[in-house]
Length: 371
Image 1 (cartoon, rainbow, N blue to C red):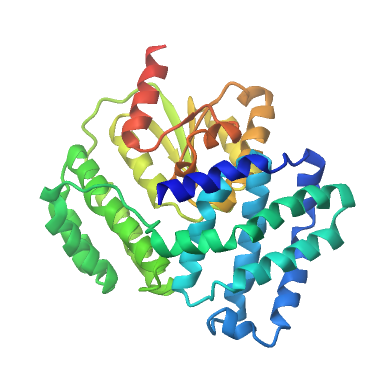
Image 2: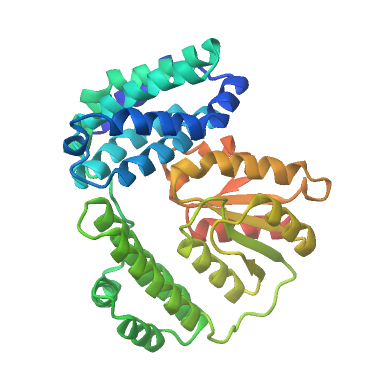
């Protein structure tokens, strides 16, 4: 698998850098381009066969996410992200009964739409990337069929039984059982961290994997996330034993990012470490984030991004924050699954550091505090 994926990544080196003007043009025309692709595909007599008899809205959502993702690829100039994400996308939509034949049809529709919507010079470079994706279709199908792209971190065997009980309660919608288990497990800050990292985090990874493979519905995934939110609100109230620190951190999910549980757990753990924490939750608009930063004046901003198609908005948010005179020296740390696909992706978003987990975040903050 590695060799085939490595070959795909290597082949991206032939792809052109997209000029800023072309990226801006693509981004500005996303609504009308999505509408055009939606129309072109929905009028096909075989469309329901191609999309596995899913509602058309599932396809429309894919087109919207696709355009946001391609903007992220272009603006970060990171084609490794493209190569790594394509097989995952094929795999996820295949699990939802989309035929692999849907993707070349979609890509051809995007090529025609980009050519119609954008100036010729911008369209030429962007269509070169779409043409490359089209040419790699067979390779991507093989990768999607031969590799499991849904992985979760290793789990301490001592926690396995409790994790499975919690997971089963999440899947059956038994919020009382989840709260009962959590309250029994957590009475100190140290136990809170252990519960988050060894039960909640692996359970949410597994919930995501089950959704990606089509074993649970969006509603079931939302129910599990809602229950976890109720649990976190309950157990985070345990007494904080650490002495207060003179450091402030603001934690939030990036604009348009609705996955917030990881950021929520990070904010709780940092608060129990003694930090002064402000946690803003999901999908914080950049303008409002800037105002909060100016008011709170944190030493660190921690931005969480789960979905790769939100990377462009993250990059824009970081640029806007750094453009503010009073915030230009703010230390910005990014985290979340979106950055795991490429080791240097966080640099492309203008951040000052990347934390893959709470341990990385602690190491970074320790170095800052010692400076």
